[in-house]
Amino acid sequence: MGLIELVVTVCALALPTQCEDQHLSFSASMSLNQCVMSAEPYIAQWINEHPKWVAVRWRCDYGGAKEKT
Image (cartoon, rainbow, N blue to C red; front, side):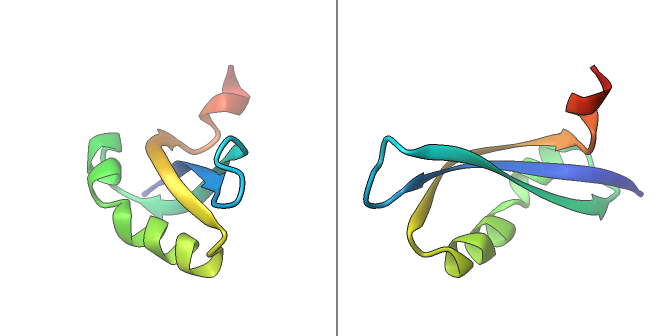
C-alpha cells in the first residue's frame, strides 16, 4: 500500500475569497483516479468537522510527491 494525499481546496463560508488547500493523507492501494472518485466521504467528514468551510474542488496525489521535486 502507498500513501495517497487528497488535496481539498476549501473556502470560508463568511469570506468566499478566502480559500486554502487541506491535505488529507491515508494509506491505500488505488490509482489517483480511484482516489478522486472515492473522495466524497472523506471530504464530507472534514466539512462536518469544519462547518465554516465549503469544499470547492479536490484532487489526489501520491504522498510526499511535492517534497521530492
